[in-house]
Image (cartoon, rainbow, N blue to C red; front, side):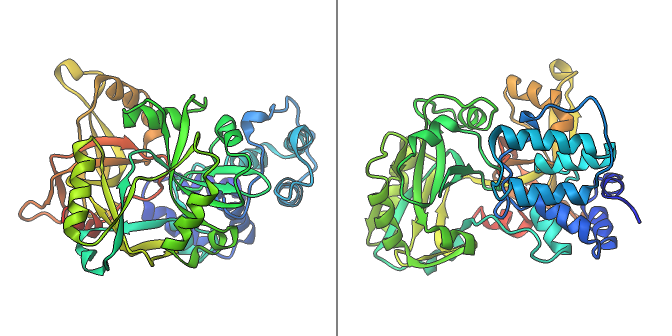
Length: 423
């Protein structure tokens, strides 16, 4: 029987998603593989509070232990917080000494929450049903669902930051949409005293209006000064773990406003207005765009949180933006020779294949120099339309322009969503 290390190597023999899913199906009865996948990617169920950045790799190998024993320690001692701090780091260093080089490789990747197999949570769950707990996220619908709105309704500014869920329990932890935990100790210290629960919104930087620059700083290894959150929803811990709430939105935001009252330095409530008609919604939207904002979100006051797409939360935007996966890097010509010319990208259902440009020189060079790291990651692309050449089976975008990196996302959008975003 193949080891986990050997299965990982087999998964990486091709970048094709279909190939990788077929490999997983070969091993769908492998309980150890399922355990490794869950411990690595289930960031709702498990937090180990230690990463390989904190650990000194051993210079010697003592052998005589197994990956199964290492996983027991990881789950029952680190994840349960029976041991913490320096003791937890020392335990990890000792485990690494006792494992074979191949098992140590797997263990390190589990700690870093990425097996480097270019598969996301949703793809893994296609083979192993409900293995990885989905990170709760309520997505907006597009303008084709406008008839679902009942007035009076609430309209809010669509923020231009980076999405986060702020989980306040015994500790304060900040998570990206993908479930990746952010390392923001100063921001988290500013949140001390917030009542328990989950605060949903986006992070921005005070005084920094350049979205690309601000999001890059927030997602970097070094926490920048001036981070604050603009929030629009609140869930109890039980509601968040269940991925749904029976509390209507009007009551959730009343609780939210009350809870953040004494933390206005680092948490602000999103700009909002109760409106009686779509005409009022358009006036609010126009004012946001006039002032340089991205758009607005129109919501029913009685909407209930659910993990998935809410048909009574409507995103209002003039320009369409969608997410695509990077599949290749085309070298430029002329003055761009030796650096990036265009990104090759694909939609989630592989029905749209196109090339993206529109980079600053700084971004162009940074992408070219990080090609291996950025392959198969997600970016946002701005576009004006979707087209298909006569006789072709695939679509392309009209005037696609690079918008931003999306480290908070694992999955590219599909053709239907990309088309509807233009309506």
